[in-house]
Figure (tube, one colour):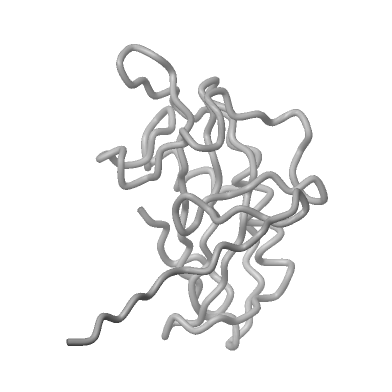
Length: 163
């Protein structure tokens, strides 16, 4: 009878090495792109994921207000090759302020792609301009949470906003 012993080698880490993220999609602060004034209230390890919320858009006026904001401010960049999905993911802190915005882009087959910067810049700016995110509570304490908006783009025009 043979015994096989296996283990993990312990890696020495230095202070410059990044620790693994808690969840796929966690957004770490990046001083090169994030506003310095935006802070999470309860620490990065306590930001709730969107799937922990169990509800739709938490914006004053609900989804119709979000849709209206984009319908009134977005100027389509008409182009037959601008098709796919643009996801803007961010954190809403315990004060209802949003920050740490990240943009992901894919074609309609979910393959990474790049949209015209005039499209992504507009969507990002309109999202950043939204100021009425609802403060959510857990055990009567205001929380920080991740949120996202997905824009379906066909020929440079928004055809759908999710969730």
